[in-house]
Each structure stands twice: as C-alpha cells, then as structure tokens.
Length: 218
Image (cartoon, rainbow, N blue to C red):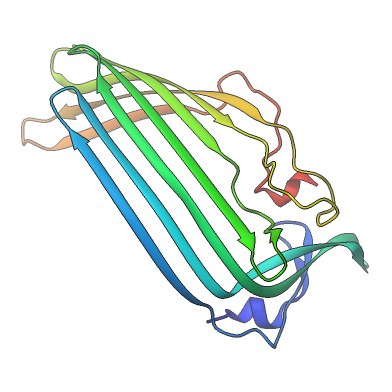
C-alpha cells in the first residue's frame, strides 16, 4: 500500500534537498516475483547465483520532473512527483569466495538489475547501475587472537546507461572505481567472552565521484 508521504507529501525533503509532491490517487502495488537460487560449495569454493524476475502492477516511484521546479523562501528545488505504472524487474546477484591457500582468500560479487515501465516502454528512474566487487583477504596468524585478517576491496560502479533522455534534471554520472580496506580480529577472554575489533576505511584514495542513486548529485 502507498505510504503517507507517497500520498500526501507537499514540501521540501530536508534529507535530499528536493521538493516532493504526493499523489492521493495512488493505488496499492500488486506483484509476482520468481527467484531461482543456485549454490555451489566445496573445500575451496563457496558460490551462489540468484536470478530474479518481478512483475509489478501499479509500481509506485518518485519521478523527477525536469520541466518544473518549486520556489520557496529557502530557494529553488528540483521537483519529484510520486506516480505509478506497470513495471518489469529482472536481474541477478552473484557471489563467490575462493580459498587460494590456507591464508589467502579471493572474493567476487556482481549485482545487476534491469527495470522498465511497461506502460510506456521507457526506463524507470533511480534503478541501480551494474556493480562489480572483488577483494583479496589475508588471514593473520597472530597468537592469542583468532580470525585476524586484512582485506583490500575494489568496487566498480558502472554508469547507468539505461536511461531515457530528458526524464531527469541531468544525465547519470560517470562510472567510478573505489578502493576500501578493512582489518579485524577477535579476542577471547578468560571467561570465554569474545570481543571483535574491526577497522574499515572506505574510499581509501579519496576518489571524487557522484552516485546515481544519491539525490545530492544534483
């Protein structure tokens, strides 16, 4: 069912810096989803593949209106209007861990989503672009500690190329690559209490980028 803000919003969304307009005529979504999951495990490889398709009647979403803005005493804001249409979603999630040696592990992840407004045969806005992730993890053999590790991760976020021109305030931003680093360990006390300590640094090289899913990119 549509939420209160989807029905009755009429003002500035202070979390995104946009003006949202609700739609009191919205109806409840009705959907049918099919998911196939394939799993593979042995001593060296742990992998999964999830493939999904979802048909949604009266899919509710917030649509950017590039032909209109809202002026308030706080300034001028891009307008987003809640609407609905029939939609088709499909895609896949893939993940794999490979134990290269006793101490080294390689991780791979892929997430792909496709979505279309079947009422107009146009692409839906704010659908995640293709994402690819890989990481290498090294287990540290430290005495009196358990599961100590260091991990370097690379994340590639592709440009959203499935976009209908003229339906947004600006075209989707460029693809980008980020590097992350993490380290952690577990400490076991004399009373068998386990404490985990983890340190993560995201965007290790301070790369400048804009995320298609973030409304602050405007």
